[in-house]
Length: 261
Image (tube, rainbow, N blue to C red; front, side, top):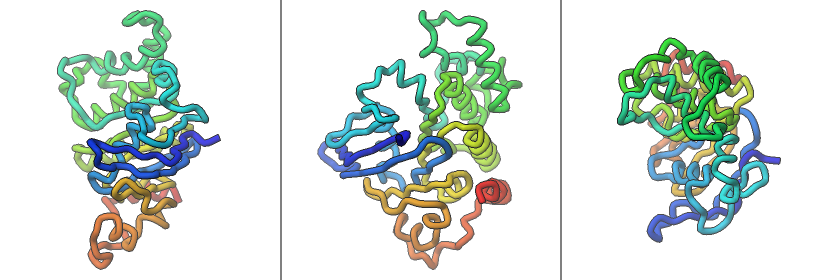
């Protein structure tokens, strides 16, 4: 049984087609990257997979069940959403932001036990940010905030992560650190689906790259099959002569890519 099944899905915003007749199956485990330019339908597809949007036609299934028919609390125990980097309006401690991930498991809102606190400490350790536990979420860097959101998702005890442009707004160092952490968690058994418009990020950690353009799948395969000058030229509307075959962000990402070989 596939983790996600997207069957003949069509979705429109104000009568404007964003996704048309899309079919996609994603297996359990590993990392799948949705690669494409802005406006290609990546975020819409993620929201359909999360059950935040309802398809006009077709259906989306999670482990064989229609996403829209799964109770939200139950869904939160299976699947976690990690949005783009954002800044909270209130200065919660990093520990408290991660603790919010325990809400789907708490019988009464805000009543947490020692087991919840232990889970938070474990998630902070796994993401390498234990030293930030007492820091204010609004005062840490963008990369640290994103790792905090990953830790919060792990605290949900979900093993499926849906991430929308996770490196958006991060500097180079934080991009590499976040991608390295995702790579490590995938090896530990977590499943990741993330959107990006950076070919290097997709090639660095995703064994499978799904290229999207104008709400349709242009190409689907390994980085060697998809992240090529020819396919990138088609995806972004550029002549392949303008694109090099390397597509390296730098030594950090090159090292990550080597772990997927």
